[in-house]
Amino acid sequence: MANRNGFPLITNSSFAITNNCIDVDGAWEFLRTLLLEDWQNEFSLYGLPINRHVFDRNLNELMIKSENGLRTRSLDGFEVVIEPLPQADVNQIMELVNSISGSVGQHDALWNIVSEGAIDFFSNKTTVQDTVRVIQSRASTYISEQS
Image (cartoon, rainbow, N blue to C red; front, side):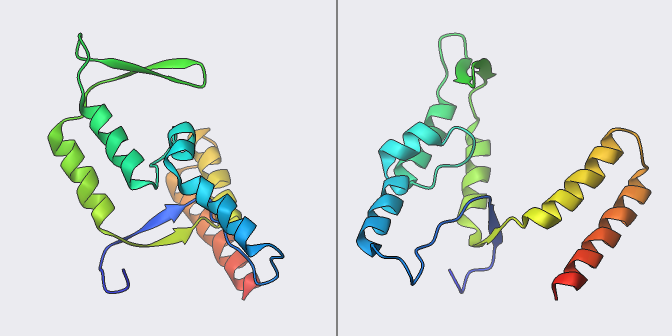
């Protein structure tokens, strides 16, 4: 991946095994379970599964039409109607996935600064210009303090 030009994948979770780990084999066995199809089938409702078999199967399922052309899926007790995904959209998704050249994690402190500013904007408490100015100022201050 180092030689690829593309987009970074933004993750909200990451895992590591530290040098101080007492049971490296056990830690690897645990992490391995997170990558297997059984776990990915069970817990990949809200994002893209990272197991390629599960990813491909989910994408193919999204293209299948039911009797009335629509499918439903239960998410947290709510029934969601899903229209079949056209091949052009699948191609676009695959182009994006294949262009990923690395990953970056989400920085919680900066995300909170942006979220708080967005809440004020969407609550009509500030204008877009003021929101951007406040977010930029707070983020710059935070980054300066961390250096």
